Length: 242
Ligand code: GEK
Image (cartoon, rainbow, N blue to C red; front, side, top):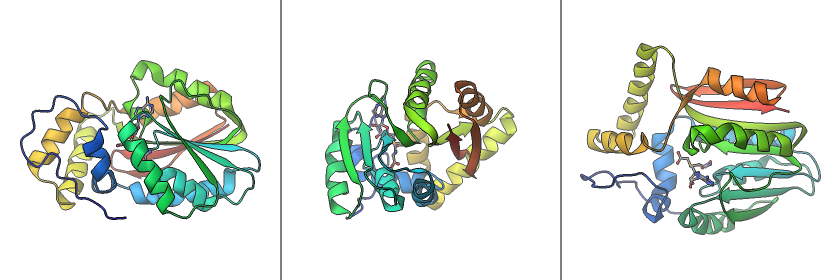
């Protein structure tokens, strides 16, 4: 598959909001790779978690699946039988490309795709649920209800893999992490204009929370083991086991 370069914000833009539209979907693999520290590492390990946690005759969910990278990662790790992976995204542009993407790669486990809102979509018989940089785009007051629904739809012993951009209580630490992230983006070829335009557009739709807030909420909902297994700067991945 040819990776198109993300230069959406290379010139001055009059966009008021960031959205997962056709333009973003077209360059998404390049965009996420050059913007999210640890993205490949997280996908590589998603397969390893899937191998250990996905059980026979169960479902796996990829919530906010974009082009299906996490679905494909789960599929490559699953050894259990009679498993169905369900990918959901509310961006039609993403889902249309996701179908092509999934078809282009060999995968053993059945992957079913749905255009829809993850807040409405039923979760049942889940041995693994992935929220790979999706919860951060959900309105803060709706996050607990979504996580509660996920918890209720999971089997005991199942795993939720939650990857997020986070913030830090100490403002110096927070600035340091943001700065290191911007350096990461510069090193990946983004200009100052691209970084600052994307930052101000994203600020309206991507609201990060702290690791403590994530841990507290997941534990409160009943997950028995909650821990961070990956971190690079202000990008983390958490596992929560029911
Ligand atoms: C990956 N997980 O490559 N319902 C459904 N989808 C939603 C909703 C919602 N309410 N809100 C946002 N999305 C992927 C990457 S990207 C992360 C996930 C990023 C979708 C949105 O359309 C987009 O495709 C995805 O969540 C977030 O492993 O771009 O930083």
